[in-house]
Amino acid sequence: MTKDVLVSISGMHMGIVSPQTDEEEEPIEVVTPASYYCRNGKHYIIYDEVLEGMAGTVRNKIKISGDASVEIMKSGGTGAHMVFEKNRKNLTYYRTPYGQMLIGINTKNMKVNVSEDNIDVSVDYELDVNHEPLADCRIRMNITSKNSGEFSVLS
Image 1 (cartoon, rainbow, N blue to C red):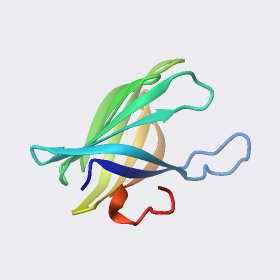
Image 2 (cartoon, rainbow, N blue to C red):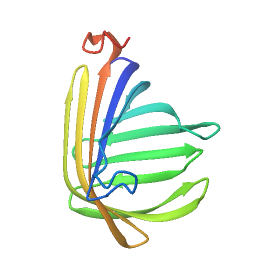
Image 3 (spheres, rainbow, N blue to C red):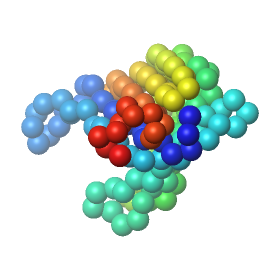
């Protein structure tokens, strides 16, 4: 994998009804350039995110430790250290400009597939906020070398 990669992250919360539409939320997808490196068998992906309606950016660091765990660390406009480990519940504080909340992440299923120019991650988990169940969630990540040709239209 090269240092310059493209990251595609798709997230879906099932069971949350939007007050504006009375329908379940649609998946959210972000495709952005990122930096990649591998150290001690762990894969790291770093990218900046601009949040709509907020000044500044959020620095995101994703750490993939094989099939054992996936961590997402956010700093800047928001802050969190979310840990996904299969069949395990992890708690963390999620800091926002409006205050902080305690979130619980109960990972039900996780698959990580690493090849020479591509990493695919799939995580299914239950999300709770302040010990109250909120939603069943799904994250899909695809990290691809920019020069692999797979994302050539976006380059």
